Image (cartoon, rainbow, N blue to C red; front, side, top):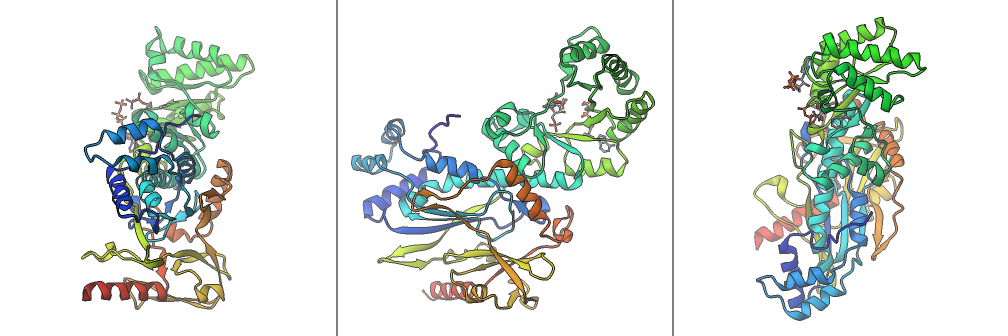
Length: 481
Ligand SMILES: Nc1ncnc2c1ncn2[C@@H]1O[C@H](COP(=O)(O)OP(=O)(O)OP(=O)(O)O)[C@@H](O)[C@H]1O
Ligand SMILES: O=P(O)(O)OC[C@H]1O[C@H](OP(=O)(O)OP(=O)(O)O)[C@H](O)[C@@H]1O
Ligand SMILES: O=C(O)c1cccnc1
């Protein structure tokens, strides 16, 4: 599928900083940035990382075409002509390490690390955050839905309410990673190979003289794929009885009605009554699909009420991450080249949480060797001796330093995988179904206390003593200045 040129999919200030670097002659200095978020969305205990495939597609095509250059020439900044020659030969030649899609991720853990010429690293900030923040948010929302409906068929119905076309398909993909089974969006199906599904709309029924005739015509056209929307007039008095009539007619032709869909009214009550009516008529295999502004809370509530629903169609609430429409992932400079050497840098803030964590870092998932469960994520400086030699770790909770957890025997699984090395793609992007399977394996690493939807127990993220010392040292240095 052809993509538009996304090179100018960036904030103007990036171009302005690139220009200023170029004017100073520092455009080739190396810089290291890390992407992380500070707070989990939806009060969830974890997030599900997504956005890497989109990042790779973007980086592999990053180049200023003549149209982009002409446009920049019209800007009031009046960039020097020679700057455009620099842009003309622009290519991403940096290195990127990132967490694989589908990985469970936590606050303050580097998810993407970019090491490149500052000129390149600066340009890509906006797009990287755009992709990762949105897709991780939707995958996380979808994962919450999956948690409450682990055994039912989950259908992504959001396109009509999505924040435009790209959000619809990348959101559908993110939902699939986190366990949805199908999408109604055919372009997402074509592009990503996600299974697609569809019933019919009220318009089909309204466009006929009667509901019964509408159902019959639909069954005539698609006899092996009939799921009938039964709530246009009166679900129990008309919709379900008409659907049963059609089920009987299909049966006479050796076919089965696949399902009915409920889209309004009391979904718990209606599904229970519809189930009884279908069972009594000899159609226990006909599935009940429900839709209508559903989210994980409503689904859990409906299940608690004993709803007999086999499949959930989830649209608006999922694709727009309705209750928290943004993930606050950031892209922070952690090291810069200065006089030929790399040095760590910090951003200081009155808000403790907003002080950045300096230095190029590695992140490990510490998995207890005795029980196979994840104990914590551990963020270190490269070459950490404790990790390299498997020495016992003392995990100090940064906000409650008296809470110290000791892990003796563990596996330290590196979270960041090489994706680009000096401009060369070195990552074999897994197939989407493998990402989805890997996500399920990931969930099994965590105690249910961290996974529950309401008030989950926070999972430990700890920084190594070396990172904390470096941070304290840089804070001291800046404050003394
Ligand atoms: N048993 C239930 N318990 C809690 N919420 C429910 C239950 N049944 C349905 N809901 C939810 O209540 C909300 C309102 O549904 P309702 O059908 O009353 O209004 P509506 O969407 O305006 O209907 P219509 O589509 O006919 O205009 C929806 O989000 C629906 O999913
Ligand atoms: O409710 P969502 O989770 O967004 O799922 C998608 C909705 O889209 C359709 O409704 P339509 O656009 O006809 O609007 P409606 O809600 O008025 O039926 C469908 O009948 C679902 O209700
Ligand atoms: O197939 C459906 O039932 C469907 C698709 C999109 C939105 N609402 C419903």
